[in-house]
Image (cartoon, rainbow, N blue to C red; front, side):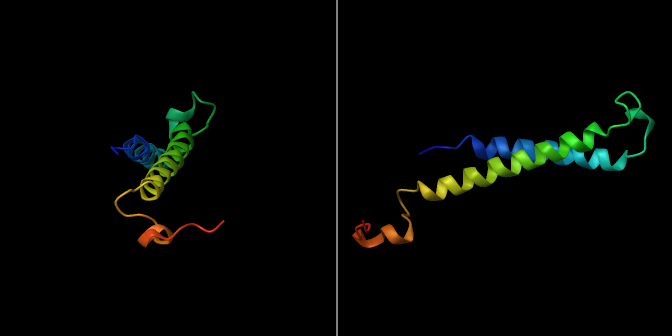
Length: 84
């Protein structure tokens, strides 16, 4: 079927969010956050990006398993008709 865009997009957000979160943790009580009223934006947005990337990656991987025509789901194997 092709590459699902959610998988590489999720990986990009996972990596970027992880790097921002680590940087935010390492610079917690630094003077660079005086301009943002003492709010650690790197940590906050890094965690948000990491969670978004994780959701995109997991949903992309799950959808790939569900739509696989070569390896059908266990209840669709051997020509079994679905129950109504």
